[in-house]
Length: 322
Ligand code: A2P
Image 1 (cartoon, rainbow, N blue to C red):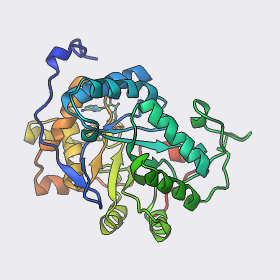
Image 2: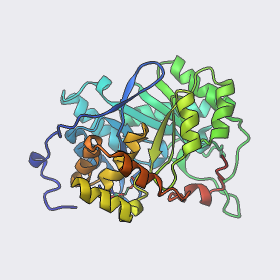
Image 3: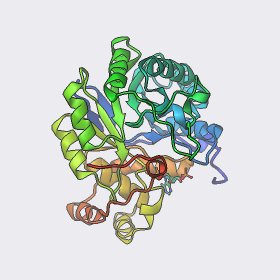
């Protein structure tokens, strides 16, 4: 952390014109938001990151019950709103239901718990975190652990996705969430969901980088009015070492991170970089103003190699087949 990282007097709101994406019902959402999966950062560090991000002008936050920090993040949202700096409707707060809470009554229980922790009356978006159901392990704080059998594999639960989705739809009916969506759904699973959904998903959040561009899925999302959102968009920094990325950054007088994020925004996808550092938070926000050229986009597109950086799926028996 830089020496002046805590000096809020030096951290003023950036004057960045934020591009937006439009949901099917006309609601607009910022094209860039803060990913709040802290990784090795403990909850209080991620909460500080949210405070810094709010001050800088971030208005979209991607949370999840399994990140284990919603309670701490909620304190920051509540403080910020109480300060009068923004109205609730100017924030876009998303969260996700964990794999152990797929049965309809647990979907509702998990959502109410998240609302309480984040200190908001409604969520702007609630996502089904993974298309795989695991055994229920009790209420929060236990609800987000991974139930494992004696060979270390996650214990599956026999709950069909359509039942979980119906419970998500009921949360919209009840006014607890404005929109519902999915995460880690392949094109095949999305196609199936669209066959039975009474309320179609507003968003699908997947790992997406120049290495893993999700072209088929993006095409399918576009055809069906589903926003495709990118987690792990910097490839946990790996992308920043790419020669093409560094060359484009130098040519534009900007950072490699801004280039990778601008690539995502230019494609019309939602991008959710995580940082807990004020300077890097600002750098990432500035990506919204970077105008990449066609040849920059082409060079970044040529990095496609199908490489997945996030190891969670592979470690837990989820195979991605388009
Ligand atoms: P930090 O939180 O210390 O800034 P991803 O969003 O792909 O999951 O990547 C997150 C990782 O990238 C974190 O380790 C984060 O570290 C780092 N990171 C975020 N923004 C930048 C940036 N602008 N430059 C370099 N590293 C960054």
